[in-house]
Length: 308
Image (tube, rainbow, N blue to C red):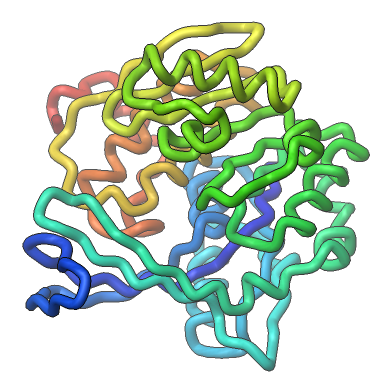
């Protein structure tokens, strides 16, 4: 089992020909909503890859909360670690998609901000049953730190996806077994620009030196990933596809990558699998709705050119 500690957000989408300038109103189309949030997305992705998953988080006692929890239950994610808050709304994300599939997102954290270290500690039994624990930065930092400490106490690999970026202390980074940022997050963690595999290599070294974390993976979108680990250091290429919606692609990668890791795959093989899952996801709309099944990923990897 993989346990994810993290956020729930109901994603509200509008498609637009381009992003508006400050103070500008433009016409969009195709409004829709879909369950999201980095924590929920990653737990959903783990389940879609065929691995038992559990999530610890918080939602409001509202329709959005009901829908988001139900969506995870449908794919088999254990939600007994989800707290329901009566006095605050569930997290919500407003997402604008441009004609190229890129996105701009504004998030109201809502109930996510109420997740406490005590909420995490109350489910230490989930940690004991897990082969890995994954956490992001859409919940309070003291709960993130509590998650990493409890994973270490439970002798379970702790994976930090430092997204969305927030300033974090070195002491928190020292608790990680894996740190998996994207280009922007890696640049902020390392203090150096990340544009490609070569610059990602330098950033990964800087992150390792700062954190004493033995394994760093920088996701590079369509360009794949850069890994710096004892088992493999180098570039894992991505897959070329026609992207229509990049929302949730990084979370899809995390879920697929960590699933393969706990199954015993090496980092390079796991990253290739994660890249394939993410490539399929960007050809579909939505966050959780775009995440492929394990069978789809394995079949697609045999003939990626057929759907590129």
